[in-house]
Image (cartoon, rainbow, N blue to C red; front, side, top):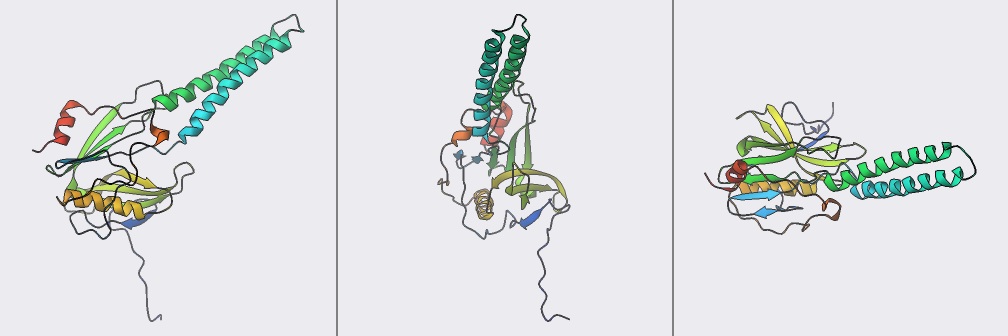
Length: 253
């Protein structure tokens, strides 16, 4: 029988999040790490807004792919016309124009995805109302269609922090989730993503600490690690909040 046993930490929420790594301190308790944000949109006495930037795609790659397929559409079309010069029928011209149309359609799809797909889905925390507001898009695969938006709000007292690790090929790394539980219990009703980090969960712990400290009416500084918006996300801003939610999420009761 071993003299010492080491108990592995276990998730406290039910059901636990997939690939759980760590539970954050309760948001009403003293925090264990210095508060820090990677991105900050607005900081005031009533509400705080932080952006959530989409990382499911490599946007520079999408743009490069769109340009490449556009060049291919021109090249394939021109090649068909050149080859056709030695023949009396129009077979090579037809093949060239068909290939050009396919590549041009792919290029158009890539450009529309790059310039039109929404990327910022902000979170607002109103410490006067003690509520968190989520601005989210319902994803569609057709970039020329307007994505519908949904606004959700929860009582901050019911939100618990969890960190998980995602091994998805295009979205790997550590992820900080807000897990909404039934009041006074650890039974999870729903979860929402707060932030992501590729290689370390330290920044996520600092983000949770910052949000918790702010909602406890303690002072925080407006000095995020990153300023502005990242270049890859610049072409597309978030849509406007609906008027009623804009008013509620930014004012005191």
